[in-house]
Image (cartoon, rainbow over all chains, first blue to last red; front, side, top):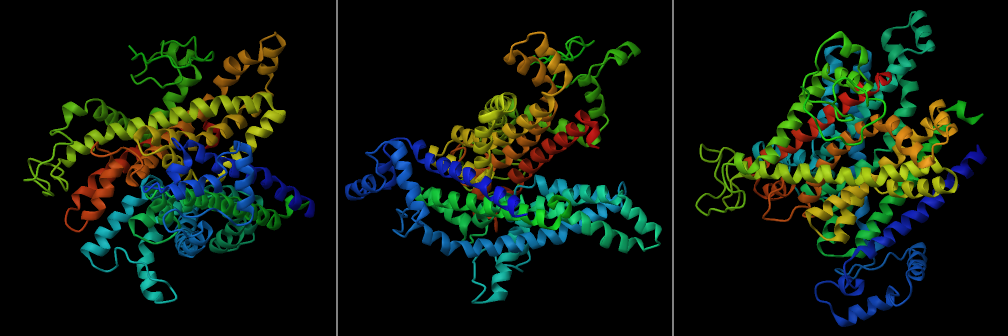
Length: 313
Length: 318
């Protein structure tokens, strides 16, 4: 166990190294002098000089990377040109909003996706299976910003039930917070529910033909107990691991969803910084996202390992 | 007789087929009947026959072809100039003159949706071509050469895959500058690691096969083995992945355009139309309905086609 843990953790180090190079390299794509571009619209010569000094632009590329990574390791992701705030501070401010959105979306995805997958596998070839597969195709094919606009059209404009925008912190007013979050969370959860449904269906189909399920049936257990206790419990492990990979979809989707519903989270931060040409913030957001993705996948892998006794031997 | 499509990478397996239809693209015309044809049918013909039996896939194919026709013949199909403004017809509801209504500066929504097909399809096809052109050779090298080359390529691929697809595309497009061309590059590069990984995995499976050993034994140089013997045998999963990647690229392009990082105004694109429509959703809903529906239909069709291709090309997966 310990050996596996150490080996698995060691594999993420080179990945993180290349991720940092990739994100540092983005700067090289900027057409022209980075210091001038990073200084923003005003091109204040003081700011340009400061940036040239700060980014070590007169030094060779590898040295600049070393300086940059050194800063990142100490939590220095640079400064926002727009707000003069440290990038890390901005990210830490916006992160909780997106985490709440992501958790709500994941809950919705699990509540829809897993039952749909179970029903579709148990009733393979029936109308239920067909309906669940249709739902999955719908979920995978709908651009979430369009679904967001349609929901606003229905629930905010036509019915007037939910606010189209306007985020409220859950600590201020939980009801208002949920009212503002339910549509975006559904939009985001919808696509992931589709993926989860497909994973659940195939995992369940595999498990349902296993010997122990046949034994359980032969013992005379009710179909309900067989499906929920014997089959689903065993199918859940791969579902959860594969579900963890959907974290990327969740973060990508959050960018657009937050934009549609004007939620001041992580996604809105990256889009706003793109428009403000606040490149350090863009780099910071991508770096934090990628690191979070790598670490969470590592945790999912370790969880998979922990619950699967066959891997431990 | 069968419609002859451009021979894009003909493969040794199907070279002697009875119809002169170059693989891997499935022929569009119906196959001639006859027992002789049945007996000599290559794997691509058999796959096409399986594909034809799948109603979803065929529906997807038809809709995709319809969208291609829409894109090619846009100037003749669109009833109005897509960028001509008219201050006397601002945000008019759908009518006989404007079937899909008009937008915030009086442009015809139907014409913009029709012309938007071009941006969408072009961006999707070009970006997936970029992914294939970069990803397949890199994956081949990783899988075929192995060792340190493989280790290096795999770690770099992991790094790319650690950045969520759309966020990476947004970052690349942001640094490259907003334009349709840069959006295509950004999407193509972001999707490349998927093809590197897939190609590598397939190559590793195939290269231990006896026929590869045989090709090596008779003295074929490695490059020739990779191109003539390995490639044709890993084409099927790549075709499936490419089809599904086109679906993802359509959404990605629409997303970038929605964020202002794709097609620049006034040129029409579905994503940017939705971005504007969002602001008028309470009094001009038609502006939001049609571009979104088009994205949905096109993506759905590519997904249906991709799922069908997967079943047709690899029956073992069922």
